Image (tube, rainbow, N blue to C red; front, side, top):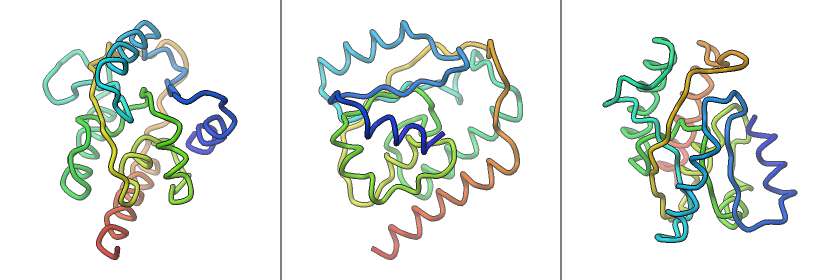
Length: 165
């Protein structure tokens, strides 16, 4: 998924990009909120957040809920708190943010937002926008122990890179 997003970013003719999962859990109508926030505060990245720690309306399986919560806590502990949902698959970013970071991206896996947000030495303005997160209408989650391992590896790689730089 990350490689597909990167290819799309590179080929895009536009200055602003939106990434949205295709499983119908994200509502296209939330893009209006992104655009309103973008016009008001001009962030580098807008993250569609699912409020996984406070709300019971998360529409995730128990495994996905706890895996996401654990990953979010690990990211905050090791990399800092740039957003309440670094595991989100719904976000908007300025293409120039991607262009500055693309050479240092890990480019593997399913969480391109995490890869971009916690890229070395890039100062970016991030704004969270709460989104409606529906039950999956098509397909099934890719979350598995193997994917969880790859995500933790990515987080640790970024953490070690910070220490060494």
